[in-house]
Image (tube, rainbow, N blue to C red; front, side, top):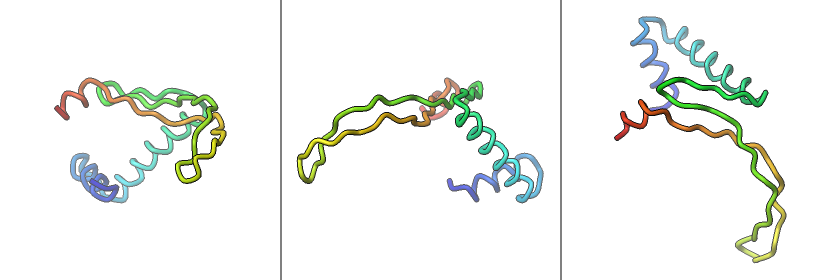
Length: 90
């Protein structure tokens, strides 16, 4: 399923236009993005949790040259599926 399919599904289920469904989807994505930028956690009960994890700096190896390289610390977004979602996928 791609974005257009999801917008069509939202429009059909909520009995709204595709334009309104697209605006709603954009609002949800923007809300999650803004919360993660602030370092907040977003929990959607039954669906899952979005949060930001911190990765420590580490030393890696360039596979082509075998040279050691330093990989800097960084933040990465993480999604952990909720119980209902896990059960639905089984």
